[in-house]
Amino acid sequence: DGFSSDRLFNQGYSYTYDDVIFLPHYIDFPTDSVHLASNLSRRIPLSIPCVSSPMDTVTESHMAISMAALGGIGIIHSNLTSSEQAHMVRSVKSRRVPLLSNPVFKSPSDRIQSDDVFDASNPYVLVTESGSPNSKLLGYVAGKDWVKLGDKEVKIYDYMVNCTDFTVPWSYDLGDLVATVRENEVVDVVAKEQVERIKGYPKLGVGTVGPDGTWRVGAAIGTRESDKERLEELVKAGVDVVVLDSSQGNSIYQIEMIKYVKKLYSNLDVVGGNVVTVSQAQNLIQAGVDGLRVGMGSGSICTTQEVCAVGRGQATAVYKVASIASQSGVPVIADGGISNSGHIVKALVLGASTVMMGSFLAGSTEAPGVFVYQNGRRVKKYRGMGSLEAMTKGSDQRYLGDTAKLKIAQGVVGAVADKGSVLKFIPYTMQAVKQGFQDLGASSLQSAHDLLKSSVLRLEVRTGAAQVEGGVHGLVSYEKKSF
Ligand code: XMP
Image (cartoon, rainbow, N blue to C red):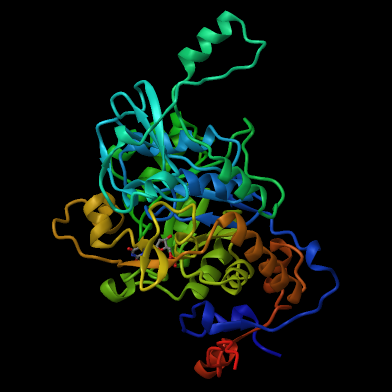
């Protein structure tokens, strides 16, 4: 019944996740016996197979901390200066709980508008003498007080709460006190409401911590000369893995960079990509990559396939690359095109070790940026790193050759609906993925890969009508009215 994966993916068609469907297998264990532990790259184990994409509307410190707390990992984007990126890595490493980061600093004479600065992850503005983090703390302004003022632009000075109290344990002696005062720069604000908020979320087991007990975090870099300095700064900040960020990874530039990283920092994992074919993958494996990122033009904001006429359906790409990468023990990251838990099941069973997500995470509390109201819905901006808007800010290296002068967009800017906190919806998503694995009789990623390879798991292609049938259909919206 159905086709083996080998037969299905060798017919000359490029399939994406929605094109294919698994036939159910046999269940002989409960959902709780499904384990989704996996590896991002050779030396980075994860307890859930989830990675947040290095995009400037997806992963900065707050997202990376939360992904690590859940047992996944975040990759900090590189559309900022190397010292800003290194600062974000340090900020992830300096925390224990998945709370906010990146406090905003202002001076008393500054003016702010509430929608400039305040959101769920930034409920306070810290007021220092000069308006920068390295000067004396004078007080704070709370977002909830500011909201009462409406949209008026007001001077901070009139609304700040002075912050003169500083308490230490009674057992401190003078030496401790002096050291504390000297050491205490303001690094963050933790609000009581947020502590309450994270207490309520389901737990998913262990977080992703390295041998030194800090959260693990990755960072994206490019392949230019200046990226070698970026790399050094990131390594000093304690980065655990670097991801070479390119839409077509099979290039001399990337191969040289992989060799450079491995020669200089043999214990630092380097992920190469993106690739979608067996020969692209083979080249990067030969160069020494520790992980491969798979996908070209399958992302929700991507226009690469339309603009450049290259790419591959994501289900085929993941299957083909994973089949070759598994022979060398190189984990595959299925990057882009994930919009529901079923897509995650498909990516993982087809051979991926993890899924990398952009739009799926972009509307969350932890994503950078502020929520705005659009046609009565709360939304956050989500943009392709190859969109003109993002490239103007600096991400052109991923999409342009070194000498290109004209910028050709390979992505778009849009908005995604408010999804709440990743700490809440990722555990639910993982539970759904476990149920998918149970239906297939696979209790782990390894067992799913084995069942697929031995042709026990069977698949079929869905016709257009079968895809419509497989989604919600034939309903009108139900509004409860009382007569
Ligand atoms: P999703 O579907 O999760 O995809 O939103 C995220 C992935 O899309 C890639 N990406 C782009 N691809 N033009 C592209 O062709 C772009 O502007 C762009 N920006 C991001 C990237 O691999 C990301 O992880």
